[in-house]
Image 1 (cartoon, rainbow, N blue to C red):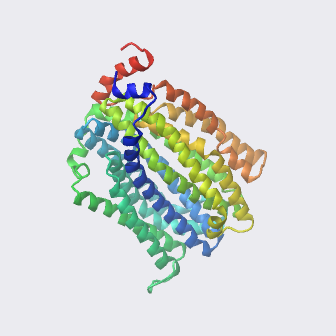
Image 2 (cartoon, helix red, strand yellow):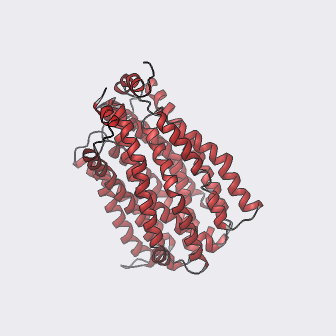
Image 3 (cartoon, rainbow, N blue to C red):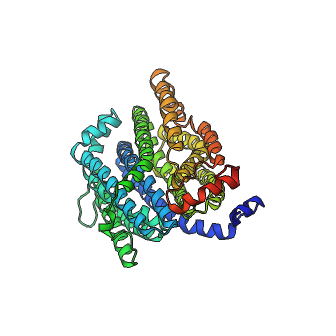
Length: 475
């Protein structure tokens, strides 16, 4: 019986060695995401003087980039699975070919969405709202920001590999440079300073595009300067065997289906919410920015969970992986509760600073209050699903999320909005109606341990003993 199993059986867990490693991964990633989200908040605040229509248009354009996020995140999830497990097994060849495959798939998605934003922005905006004034502003923004999409996704691919191999400071440093660039150029381009003509919403888009270029180049330069090996072995990235391709897409396909179908479902929800009043649309745009703040903070812990659990699975330390995952689920939920309560307590200065007043302010308060109430359960589901994926189980969380989205959430949202014609806050509440049910089902699967499904030789060799020791399953 392994040492980790013995410790678990006696109720002891090595918190002193575990928490510093968790913090070393989670805090830089959380700070990086918080910097990015803070920049989005500042974007909204700097655009706010242009009016609520501009704030609403910026929020809807953000929903289109979120749809792109859903399109490529399936490959990020699959890639992180392989990166972490191969890193744990010290398999450099596996890291290289899985990164090449992940990069290729992600860039394909980026090109498609960037082309749509640049070449057909009117069509994109017409999907999200029927308010012509908001559409016209959004079209101006998309025509420029579409060029940023390819650079943003390229940066994300590199960042995921760096995070999975515990080199988290490089993406964080690049984010500092990118956010600083974005803030400065917003000041220059939106209102016209340093001799540059005022560009309004187009200035915000141009600043975002320049910041994306800085982020991409900074990650590349810092990785090169520190001698990081895996990003620059380009030939090795594209040496794919048929067996490797089958293994990759077998793991990625469920995650891809999850992200795409959930992305489409969220688009339907956003389209439904986009048919509300202009004040509510502005409140939703501000809420999405605040939601990004919570998610960005949480993503650091989710990324750490994927790495700390996935590397153990890849190395064949399956008992340690299970015990780490168990602590991480509840620890992360507690952290999110504190973050949500912090935002709720500061709701008045935050919402006021983001140009919400009167009916739009009241709408924003209700949206934030509802979200804080469900965020702990929602993020608990997320951390469990990320843990499953990093450990090789890409199916369970996917099936549950897709089934509940299309069988419960969408019918409730559409029915409450167009049939029952309930107020916006009731429609919004329906967006989270499935979370408590899924949490119970996810917990049941979690304690079964069936989500531990290695892809490395070391992990597969340790699996029979793990099942036998923990559940009495014969090898």
